[in-house]
Amino acid sequence: EGGGDDEATLPARQRMLRSLLEMKRSGELEQLAQEMDDTRAKLEAKALQLREISARMRRGLRDAKRSGELERIAGEMEQVLESKATAIRAKARRSLLKAHRTGELHELRGELDELA
Image (cartoon, rainbow, N blue to C red):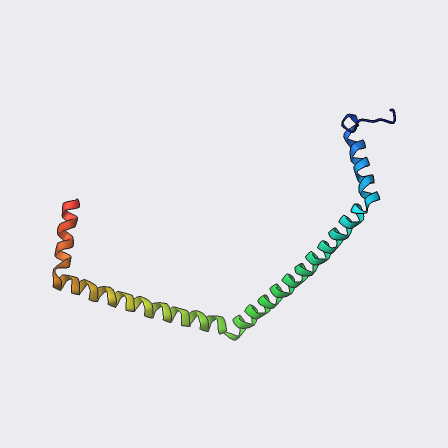
């Protein structure tokens, strides 16, 4: 090949090698390698943090289960939900009775009959 190689006519492998060589000469390759190394170090640190958090959570749940705290919390949640359900049923009952007394239920039935 002559000295005036046209970049477009070179094989892809040769173009890639030239590009890498130019990146090395300009310092860009070293900069990319450093950035990759920095990123790898940050990712490893984050992974370690996540493993530590996960281990703490597992220990906390295991301790809570052993001490009966999870069962106690579940029982409290059940009581709260049952209390809310009872309150909602009572409110619905009161609303239905009020609607019955005022004639609203009868009106609604008439409207639904017309729609059907």
